[in-house]
Length: 120
Image (cartoon, rainbow, N blue to C red):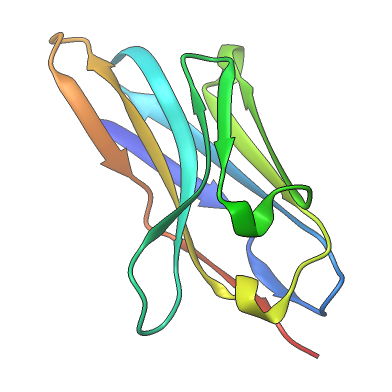
């Protein structure tokens, strides 16, 4: 079993900042990719940012230059700094991790989600 626990969501005014963190724990052999997705009401879940193999990073076009993702391998943690937030960033943000469990089977695990609301 692999568990993901997110923290850091909340309510912020447009132009403000928030920092999301996610800790991955459990029967982990490796973590090959960690990232954040979001889902707004009435929309499909979309990739926001992802770190692959510890160094390759990709961002959604809508957040480039505003969001920064980082990973702490020693703590199995992924963090996303979100600056210059816009109302359209409002969504539930989900942490995701891909890798191998101690049973050497692949896992694709999700956190429970944290609400980010950008509103004046």
